[in-house]
Amino acid sequence: MKPIIDKESQISYLKQRLNMFMEVLDAIEPEETKLEDIDRLLEMIDDIEEKCEQFKSR
Image 1 (tube, rainbow, N blue to C red):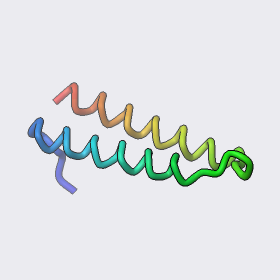
Image 2: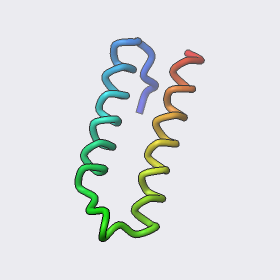
Image 3: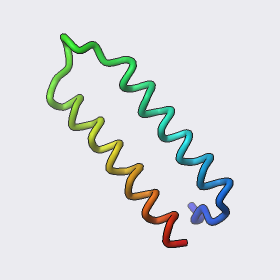
């Protein structure tokens, strides 16, 4: 996969990732949430943050 260089594609990518995160978050039932579910959400946030840092350096 080639790097995403132009700003419009970077923004589009981040929006898609954030939308995916929100869908996962909305689907979680608080009473049934396990530690693994929370860990997965934190992983998703870390991935988005890492991608933001990569985009800032391009």
